[in-house]
Image (cartoon, rainbow, N blue to C red):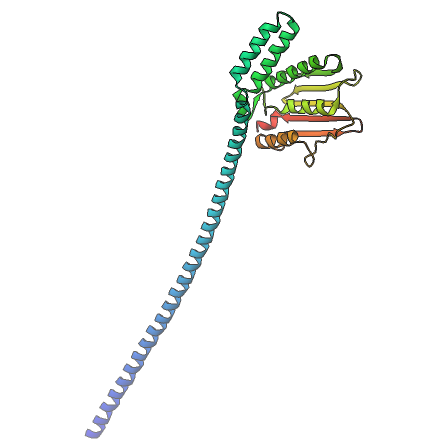
Length: 282
């Protein structure tokens, strides 16, 4: 009986040891698996975080480059404007306005006594120079009425200088005082027509039309070709004056707000400058 009892107790202790071993092994396995998955999760989170940082850095680099490009464009625009202003200031500095106008007034007082017509020419020329040297021409836009008056003064002096050999047909329609336009565009188109055209034939005068109807301004210069120069106005083959016009127009107007078109015929040439002020309001 005693032997059986002892044997039973050993069996019980062995069972406990086995159970304890299995339990401890289970715990170890559970902790090991937990540690493995925890490490794996941590690594995945780390990889995700590193990718997020990399993407964020890429976006930051892109944003930085875009900002640098924007700053560079703004810097170039400022430099271009300053260059244009400096060039204008340089041109103005070549002739002291006060000296010039005082001299013209002196000439007027001397000339008018001998010839009223000559005196009127001096005064008209002085008015033109006063407008041409005005600081307001530094602005992007000036009064349309003033630009048309400047054109008419120029044409008047040209006709008087050439007497009977200048035939110019100028006409305008509309009220221009309430609108503004890029300065010195109209006079450049007129000069281009006179330079490349024939204006000594009374049957084919230089025709200039200015109209403002329903807030659409149209300026047309039509001349007979002189046969000695190519008067081409497309953007790929132009004179410096026309190129500058296009650059200044593009800088101020949206592309759909204006047009500068030409018709290059065998014997004549027509340039049409149009500004739609309705589109500019939108």
